Figure 1: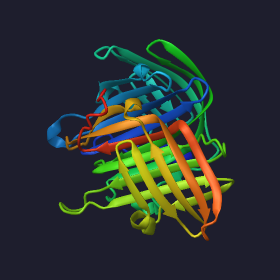
Figure 2: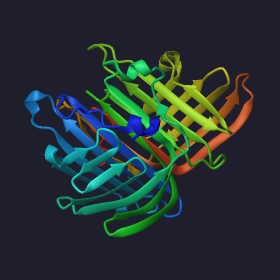
Figure 3: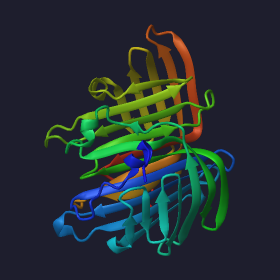
Length: 337
């Protein structure tokens, strides 16, 4: 059976035995009607040889804009034997949870934390695969150690989410689906995504500022940005942009300035620590890092043309995804899983 490019890029990269490898499929959405948002991850980790056997995990996070006390995070680890996949199409199963190219379902009962989450979703998108890296070769070489692309950068979600017994129906909630794999996470990074802007309902923003460790004394930041607005696409992901785009972030605040020959974008993403959920990532070599995640951040982009004349603004209150990941714990954010 022939598959399209989107599904081809979503195929599992792990060969079933490779050590020192991890792979992640995540979906996220923001539902304007219920003022809630969510994040689901289907993952596998194959540690380096002396750190045990490969395992699969299901992750779920639910955010409530009106009442952060209802935010929950759940995770379930399962053995390699409960991971199954099709090598010719996207059909990934972890126990009874399943991910296909345009739909997914699953259940996590996290008895230890007293929370549960279930989902039955379909998602559709018209956009082509978004490649964060500008050259196909970068997806084949050993560097960068993490590969990332989004088969569904601008998706609509339909179906139901159940969080601690509370059922929410999604009817076109905006979101995305992304595929990540590699040998090791970046040293630290900030990431943001939004496709729910007030001024332009078709606008999409994706941003990443990742610091990678090249030598013990040198860890440059690679900066990758993309914007679609008013029917035009703007890429800021060339090697020149990696180093020359301006980007500074700390927990809860990210400021950046990006430009090409057509446009200058000045942006800010703000995230309240009270609305963040902290989760623990583990590299295949056993090193830990902590992700401070919010799907209820706010973003504001000021757009100017090449001559500096104002083109307008894009903004979204509480519908921007953002995460701040570091090799240390920030006491302002509670680590849930």
